[in-house]
Amino acid sequence: MKIAFLFLLVPVLSFAQYDFEPSSEHPFGLPNPEAPKEIMDFAPLIGECNCKSYSLKADQTWAEPIDMVWRFKYIMNGMGVQDETLKKDGRHSGSIRQFIPDSTKWYVHYYSSGAPSTRLSTWEGNKTEEGKIILYREQKAPNGTDGFFRLSFYDIDEKGFKWVGEWVDKTEQVVFPTWKIDCSNGKTSQTDEEEKNKIVTASRNFSKAFIAQNFDEMGNIYTDDAKLIPPGVSIVDGREAIKARWEMGKETKVLSHSMDASEINIIGDYAYDYGYYRGTSQKGKESVSTWKGKYVVVWKKTSGSWQMYIDIWNRLMD
Image (tube, rainbow, N blue to C red; front, top):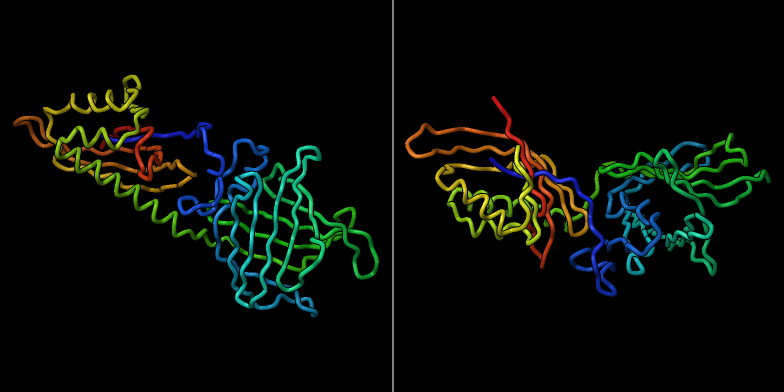
């Protein structure tokens, strides 16, 4: 008996002049639709990770790791990316990342508190078909051999990523790693957790309204342009039509209802939530019916509140 499916294609909306800048609502900013499409190369890295940084010692063994925070955000009203590393040993660094369409490359300008410079060093490169982001800067080896210092982001997923800095020769057959960072233990974002809790609260409020047969309250949990996708029938379009659809079942009393989210992911002003629902109901003097199923909901944030935008579900049979 309830709830939601969502495959999310975020529409291009009309935004004010600086709506993509970092803010209290979006602490890491948002990608600007007018930016090169490659701005999304760094989308999985946007946010903050707790990491371990390892450097190579003179005896060619790895030093004990240093704890650090690596934070990525959109800057210049969503037209570029900035990152910063904050290390417990007090050595901090950062970079400004811009994609230049004319050269079809990312250019990364690096700076560091440990070695201030009048001219920033620059790496350039791209995202590969395998999903890595690889950047190069020409640099000779200590023996004078021509080559590059190569930076690679890899194993990028929802839990974080890994990074390695290596010297390579021009053929990239000789590889000598000097620095590696492990950020694969999960992103940390207090803002995201707070927003996820708001979505859980909205789900619970829906269940309460469903049990109370408060159809006005149920309707208000949907956006004006929401889509309800019940099993076996046509899509119900718009808040008022959705409210009327729920009212059709008013002869059946819902005794209990809950939505147990397996995962909630937030993407700007949209989020998706999927999991299982369960409940009990009774029609007239008939026996109490127990039911359960799976759902997906796409949420949209409007005026600071999360509302259902797409709601789809399927019944599971015992």
